[in-house]
Length: 518
Image (cartoon, rainbow, N blue to C red; front, side, top):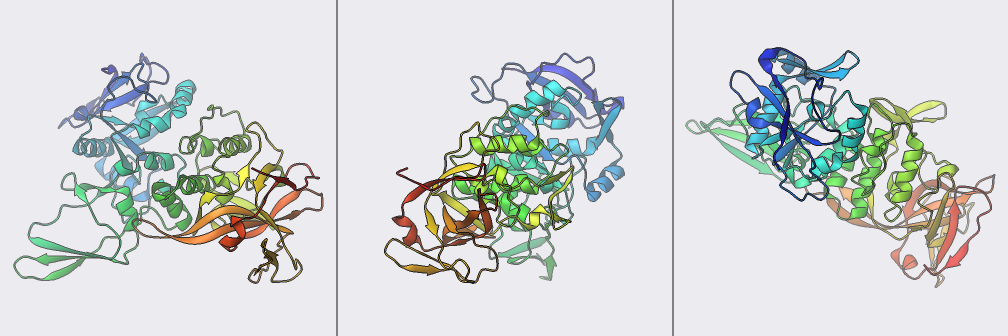
């Protein structure tokens, strides 16, 4: 199935990119031809449309294209580089608003795409009609499939205006949409970085006890590295690069510092969890944490940007509130209730049941909670050291329920010595398990969530068994059951033969324990 050319813009024309007077079809896949961007003296955007191509179940030929993952807000280094290149490209957003990038960055992206064997390029700024709300809705609805079916994903951390070095900070990892862009086809995701070719007059020695250092040069100035490899190099520990003069044998240490992913370990381990989690539950836990960690321009994007990763389709409707959308997402993913694994220190609202209270949304900034009359960044409360890899608890809440709490089916234990700093529980044989010193309210019961593993940083991710995780619950003054305090582990022997109970947590008061055979 060939594409239909619908728009052309040459760099020499010195015009803004616009869909004005273009005969386009709402929601169709549109791609930029790589070879035309690489014309020596006159880079050209030729946009074609693949009408009737279903990316979910393609019946015809899918063109070989690379998708670009970037942040609209450029890093300081990219601003500097694009200003020096002075090849501005303005994108018409409608209502006399424009977004400026650079032909320089677009050409570098095309070079990387060609290097990866791709004939076409997909970039949201050009391939989505930025002045059509209807086209945006349709494109967002199947955006996940656009990235999933691409031959390669090229990450430009500092923005599409230029290729920056990995040693400079970039906002890419903080953006909502970049999570699915980087993880739907993890083996084909590359980071485009500014890195000179190795000097042929030197030999290079690489000593590594963990990180993988693999850089594939596209030309003399830019190179590609697998995303997971570059993530593993963000800390210099365990990676030593030395260049050795072939004649004099003089040795010089080579610096390779990766700062383009920032230093927020919650963000980084959530990304790594989606990329390399050992089970679907672990990957989905990491995706849920990212809703609490990342940001966007519109609050609804926090759901629309992650629904494809969670295997859910929600109609794109920006008139709905973020709270409604998150609850629908939770109800539709109850088979993997990974929203139980977001964190333990954030507030809980009984209306939401076991779904954590939704943080305050700040456009293009870190979400937060208001605790004790001060704003607390949500990323300080998110779990990043442990993942639940297999759930024992079952959520029975209806998929259409809203603010009615959560009906659970789970193994539940009564806490003895509740007023002690070392409360305990008993298994069926009478064996006693005493918790370590607890400086928080423990409630009256513990509920088993499932088996957990401790996550250690590393280029492949190191997971160690942690045991069955439990949360504490108790009745509020109003009489409804609620989650209280932190979570902890109990012996596996306690869980194996324990009975199961139904209980509604959150919602209206008055729920009681009911034995079940689920």
